[in-house]
Length: 115
Length: 113
Image (cartoon, rainbow over all chains, first blue to last red; front, top):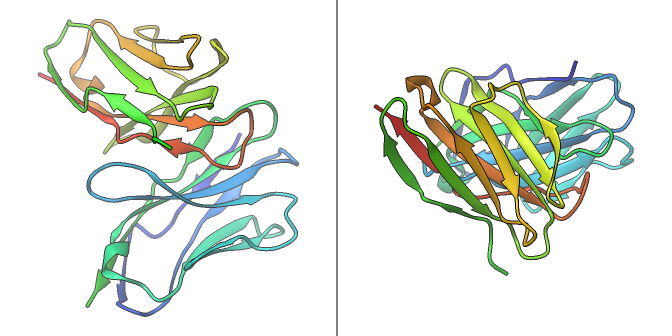
């Protein structure tokens, strides 16, 4: 069975500092995709970054990068130069192999950026 | 390019009633997935539609159903509402199968009294 684990219920970070949000996953599929989403208090899920299981390099999107360690089954999100607007809930998700777009989500990490 | 739209944004119903939620995906996207988000259970997959066919279904009772139209718009229906159905219902739009980006709508917040 597929599973996503986020062990940090909440985190604080100072503005302009970098922060790492942890995510580990479990799957027996050789092909899978890993996603990170941001959910502000408004409720909308905002796509941040994607990493495919066969991608050789870590994904980056602006201030977001994904530290993908396949052997350890981890896909940590790194946010550089945190901004006050980064305060939100962050979810790690996985899509398994095959013809599906079904996502399995972790429980999320609530990030608070302090001035 | 317009994003994913969901209507209505807020709903209040009473137990036993039924409700229909609508999702319009990004233009050109053929895949729509539905999720339920509650404080207790987190984000749970309901079902996925691709080209009017249900591709996957989550572990929800038969009271939850959905469909997709030829223009890719999707609806989900919940019959005989229970208090536990109170949740944020999110739909996600994808260009095809196993694409790298899934875009979510703003959600419909359903309250069952």
